[in-house]
Image 1 (cartoon, rainbow, N blue to C red):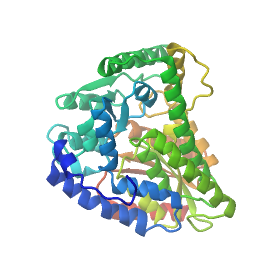
Image 2: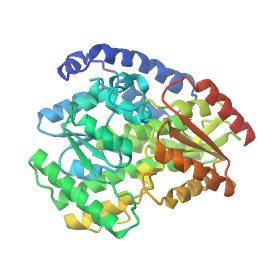
Image 3: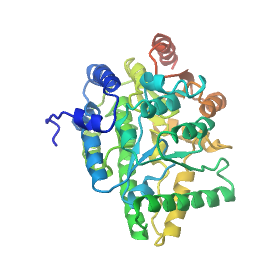
Image 4: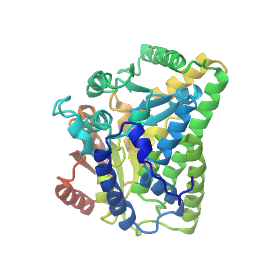
Length: 430
């Protein structure tokens, strides 16, 4: 289907058991929000970004129909909530991995009676989308794979297993210890065994290596999008860059590679021609903290409507998604390749780990590389790992001479006025 064609997806949604009334309410709001944040407030966007506009405009349509067709052909659909679940293994076993909905408080009504009030916004949202039958990606999933990256998620999986098959991966907490690597490699082997049983297929070294190369190619192209933001004339906004990485979690990897290649080529040309999305002298901001799922664009929108630009995100929907890369794919056996995968994922510096000095070093390095004038330490309400780290990071970054602003918020718009005031004051101070 082309970008100009239209289709009626209601029969498909009804077949999936979607709550049509609630789903209609969501889709009635999302286009207006997207138009306000992405279309009306931005100028001089790259032409290639139109593909990502289209994806969001049909967020529960074409991709869901593709997944439905693949499922009818025998492929298994795996829903994930975290980048510590390796896409390489999912796709090597002919599964389709999809990141699940969770970036708005619209769905909280469906999960609020099952979770404590002081549960983080991301968990409330994700469970609500699934339990409330609002998210077609959740409805499509044959298996949900969780992980033990925080206490809230550990208990969320126990709630979700009443609604969908759930498999939980153990994520080491002290990753620098030798036994952490041994544990994670065994967890990868156990995951493979689970997926082999689910799919009826046997993993081969050839399939795993091919999948690793393909996923690595996608990450490398996203990295190039980020690299372009280091330019003095920033060729793409923080909002558009965030959208690119958000969509990468659930779109087809081969299509992403094709479209990312076009975007990277255009960004290279814009840099050569000195074409930027903000005026010269605009303040450059690095955002660091919790992941931002669609449609969580609040902080980016506020910052970038104040003659400032977000030049990088040290988040799971930012640099953590692609920075820890394979140096070389020398492995030829499954065991050798799993060691490479384990080292790649354990190289990601998430707040779930302790100690976690690597994240502080990452932020300081990124602030210098992207020539950031300041850092916003962003945390979702009740996300204890990131909120605790934000306090210590604030002190460490200021010692390094990097101005910081701590923001703790949720998905609602109730604090927008307060955030506007605080961010404006921060930008004026830089």
